[in-house]
Image (cartoon, rainbow, N blue to C red; front, side, top):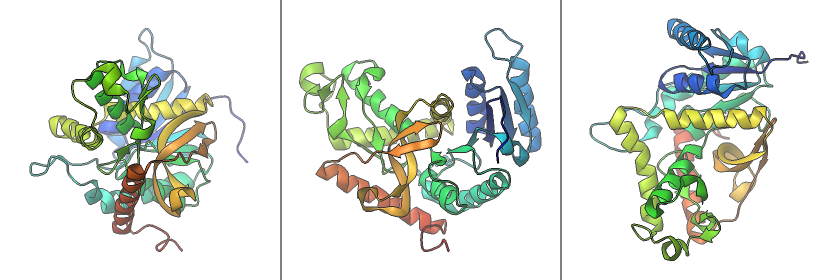
Length: 330
């Protein structure tokens, strides 16, 4: 039985380009009294922790205890954010490199990480960032018998933010006034749920008339633009980290404050849309102190349903490359 404790603790596994941003954002959040970092490169973990520890002496920073450690730090963790493994590599030949190429390598990384975590806990809420995300979420949740709802991925949270940014930019509107999200894979088969897209109540078919956009709203073009924007960042600076780190920390806040916020995150489906334990992808979920409090099977129109099944099929193909799925788990 877990011992009572009076501190809020975060563990970050992997402090490379993404994990170091997660650490910096978490330090500013002020929700954790203790943050521990784990990395295969112990010197990097030590350096990142010490760097952030020095910053606690500055005005406006919280006096958070931050240190490097090993998997034993997970024993009393409330939240674990996993950013271990390489990200999508910049390609000189393809501006939108295939994330499935990472499946074999990062599957091995996540299996090692989950072995380390589960040696000490199955109670902490685990937020996955590692790509290809949906496949890694499936491995973490299903191969290690982790409690339902207590491990999930950032999913299409960042993809959805990009969608809102693209829509807002077209109509010269604050992105926070846009309601909309992406579903499916965190990757190039993600799709916008246009039938639910709106700006303060004005729906998809009203936007052009009411807000007079720079370009007419076109489903396929907007979808392509949103997906491509991720690779524009990747091919510009070599990686993406700021947005995805903020997404992970936002989820951590929803957990610690039991916000019951609704976000499009990656989880294993349990009967929704005709899938049952055979794939993980992003759908709207309520996130609170217990992790995924509820999966929300929102109705989709005919085109969106077609996109969803196409995305699920692609993820399942990636899962096979990583040797995971119902046929691999005994």
